[in-house]
Image 1 (cartoon, one colour):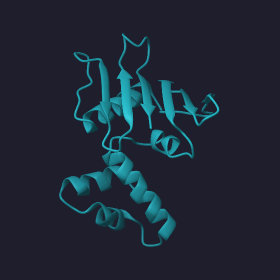
Image 2: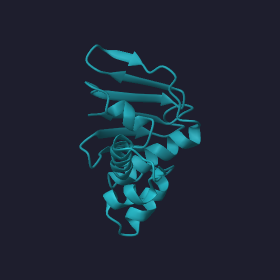
Image 3: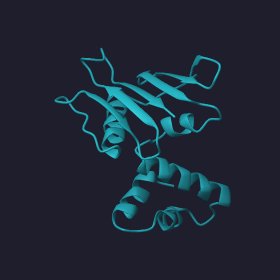
Image 4: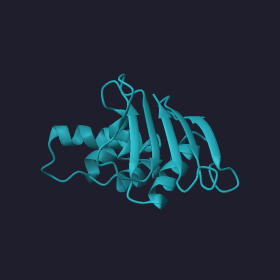
Length: 143
């Protein structure tokens, strides 16, 4: 299922559940529909993959992203590096931070390179853009 297409349908006024059903292939299972609905809800709240699935892991209280290829989570046993993490690129990481800030009603850009906000889901966001953050956008999410 295509999250971007589902978001476009919701923006056009379609109910989120109907957007999931409309974009689902005919042979989609109930589990896949539920997963699509969770992904759409997270996306509408500003959190896209792979961050959304990390935040929903059992016990996760904190997610720290230091670069497009490095993230850490705390699930009660201290910080643990996320193996095989990838946002794809520095542009994708920055775009994710900007989207989350916008979902929280805040601005994140070169003129306002630091944001502290609360996402609609209640997750707290702190993000900093380069050059203040070094070479990469950094994101901290606290459940």
